[in-house]
Image 1: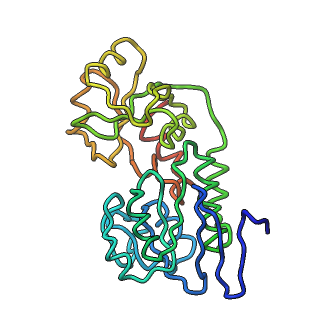
Image 2: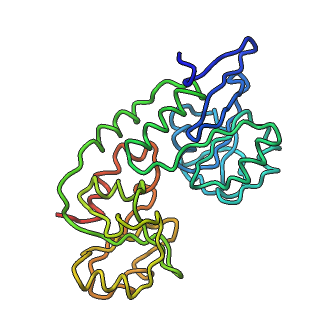
Length: 270
């Protein structure tokens, strides 16, 4: 094992460096992991049932997960996290606030922060590193299946606007996981070249992109904003809209193993 992969001391405590370069030391034997990220919750719970003792209110998968709930991802109840006596907390650079991570570390709780991955391969590599590194788990079969499923980058079949919020409209921009998922299904992102990861263009600008042929599809996921047949498509009259499962589009975890076929059916690209 190399120095940057991890080091051990005589007390059984393992030291690692997380995706952001912060040192993380914890006693694996103590267990008690809390996840503040829904996709990481699913990844850990599916790979090693029973390891998690806490998760956010938004950690909906796997179904029936019986752990303590510690609030939201953006605004977790730090007191509830500490009360659950975690040995390690899992967080993400994009989903969790630095001040909450800092508060937990100041209280003596190790926190492993994963990167805001811009591609499917990078996201899966980050999850593998977390599972097989600090958590000490064997590589799960779903991980290899997901990597194989998303290896290809096919020709472009459509160019999409991808809103993730409205009032104001917020779109998927450049260097995003969701944008890469779509590209690997043959859907280019009309805002892939935007300097912001999540730009906020006015609605007339989106209409112009569709009218001028710079986009021919609007992809409407059901999270973080819950777009439905009655809430979203009416803003783009006459345009082709596809309602998709937001979890399949944005979660880097076990769902990726079969997300491709399900998303392709929802996008109706054929």
